[in-house]
Amino acid sequence: MSKKKAKLIFKHNSFEIIEEGDHVICAVSGKVILLQNLNYWNVELQEAYYSPIEANERYKLLNK
Image (cartoon, rainbow, N blue to C red; front, side, top):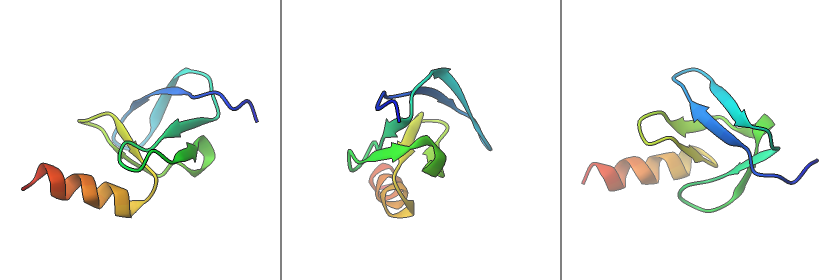
């Protein structure tokens, strides 16, 4: 494991790696997400989420 943060462009069904690394940081919780475990993100905000819980928290915050 390289322990380097990756830079990604989030697309609707995939992501593109702009700068190599092994993880990204959850925009809500700050937890480390290994790229092989990355399943949740927001294309418009270009944010990664650790789980559906964090994704839902962000959705609720934006839709108040």
